[in-house]
Length: 373
Image 1 (cartoon, helix red, strand yellow):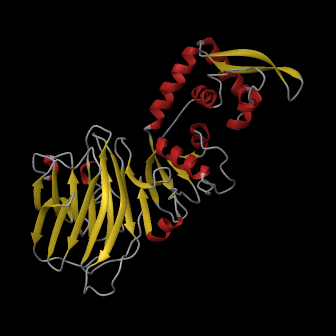
Image 2 (cartoon, rainbow, N blue to C red; image 1 turned 90 degrees about the vertical axis):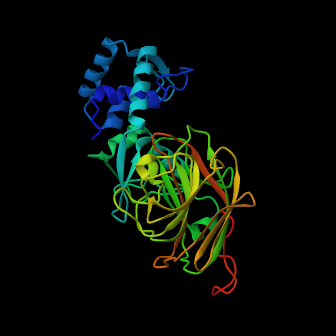
Image 3 (cartoon, rainbow, N blue to C red; image 1 turned 135 degrees about the vertical axis):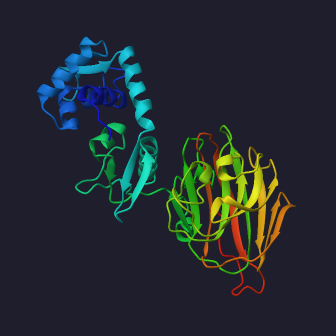
């Protein structure tokens, strides 16, 4: 649980309300007054006053008297000192990595960091999506202060939690899971940012059990080197992806039926990895390598990938050259097709673009399954 005393909450509130870098006294915001804090925290004036006195005695907050144009009178405002600003920023840095559970309208619990929650809510608000409508009222401003006020235990209760997906075609064809989102500025999909302990998946909504060819571009880099990306097929989809060496391919516990072509930049002995960056065909779990090859083209630059899945074979090409070929019996008990990635103690951006899935000739209905992402 995230427990903060009222003085700590006031420090965070002042930092987020402009009490650290006030440039002019002409437009001092109301939240920097005692009445503004009473309104924000829903507590008594006496509690706010007592907490402010404690902060002023510690040299973290200073009281200033400014002329306030809205009332035509002078009024007391409370600002952070440099020491107070440093303490508030330390508090914010600590909070950013704290995890909470998102309780969605479907009753699902999704664990995210506070930083990710704030960024998702801000991004959704920017594209005018209702991403933070509470049970009783709309959530006005996605700040850490306001989110902490609406935490029950370690759960943030929302009616909807949306990740912006850019163009309309993607909402129709693809599902975005956990940390994955569509970057409308660059028109590509971000599976993970270069942050610790992230995991993201995009799932093609249409199921595929026939032979197919997949083509896409990916880039992994900009971080400290981990963990990797997986193109998944004939895969069961109803799970919450685990981060770290799991690569988003499985939930936190157990296996998840299906296949994947992994581009693993962080060899991990705990996952039965070979001791070098590699491309591999895996089944049901990242630990089960049906075939692998050492290949260091799993990071830093854009790579073009083509994966052809036949009746009993898998062929992988990178930048126009074959890197892996496997033959054997292939189960088609499940129909999920998607791309996952994760970070852990090591980090990377994992980005995909130009995804195209095409049924192979003679495999039932012809034609492409997915448009460009």
